[in-house]
Amino acid sequence: MKELLNEAGTIVLSLPHAAHSAILSCLFEEDFPYGEWGLLDKTHIRFFGLHNIHALHASAGLAITAARFVMRRPEETEFAERWSRLPVEIQAALSSNPHGHIYQVTSARPVEKVSAPVNLFEASIRWNASSHAVLS
Image 1 (tube, helix red, strand yellow):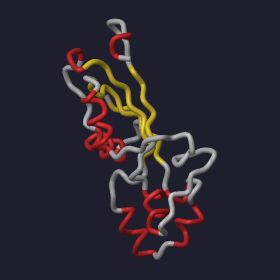
Image 2 (cartoon, rainbow, N blue to C red):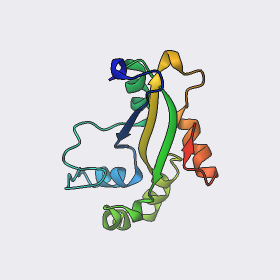
Image 3 (cartoon, one colour):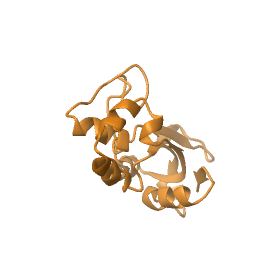
């Protein structure tokens, strides 16, 4: 796709964040329940942690220029019932991950055209601390 971009072109990727606390609650019960929609939509063929998202961009010669996070607490997801069954101690441990509520969307441009790429780890912490949904 990079070769198809014009000078001002941007690539937008919407990637399922596999380290969302709700997915981890499913794994705690030894289940990975694919469904018709949501984080575990059965059409998703790959899942990503933040490190993997950075690596995917780098391997394609892209730099992240903006991070647009859709944040959902586990009790606001399709896995709310499963989350409620977890022991409070496990919920607290999973909730301690500052990136655990992220569904992920990024914008990227060819790396040679980006002077200050966005770091998703830093962006998500800043996003949690602010009312802004877009960090670039």
